[in-house]
Image: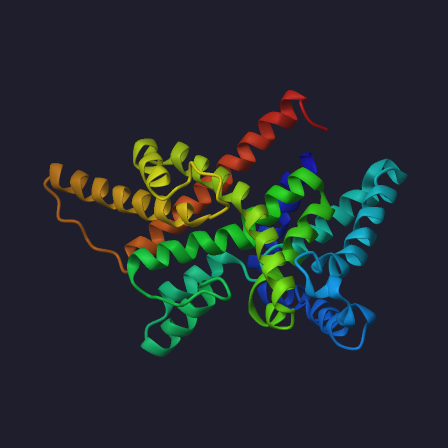
Length: 299
């Protein structure tokens, strides 16, 4: 698991050093063509199984089987170095596709309405309605953080490259243009699978948020939004994030008032605080992972 730390750092660094190159590599056109082939000319497209809730298994099995076999085969030779390189390659590929903090910076650095609206649209996860008010931007940051970073990271941590690719392919097929190519039953099934994969991620993100922020505020928002119920609805993450950012901004304003200072209002303060909170959660996850590695509890 120590390679996770290396791979995540490399993924983040590459997203900043060469964003255009990395974004060009993180393409899933092949997956879209594969889905259209299965739904059109292939035998699967004419079968009842493809149109059912478990039909996405036909699309997932070949690439995931190949990834799993490579993961197993490359783990032993040359002291595991080929396996390490394969792990890093898959994580970098599944990360994103655009780096979250780069998109947040694009919103804050835009100076006209047209460029800002375009940057905000890039910030929202695909398939969700775009809104530009402060609380909605907090929700967009955390929704994108789940899909771009933490979903890939958790399943990579649990299952290696197989898990990272599994989450990314399921997420790609659950919304957007890829989802539109699927039959109704198949689409419902893959969205249910995506919700299942993301529910655990959202729970752990919320726990991390509580630990790096105001625990009571996050816990109350989490319970109020149904986070303590097994309904696979990750909406509690956005509710907890909005409450946490609102609490931090209020505490910041109170500190300025106690010191007799006039607070200089930053532009889009909710967006800045949301990104700061996401970074703190990510660092907490990596710190916990580092403790496990140093303690010898994991390989």
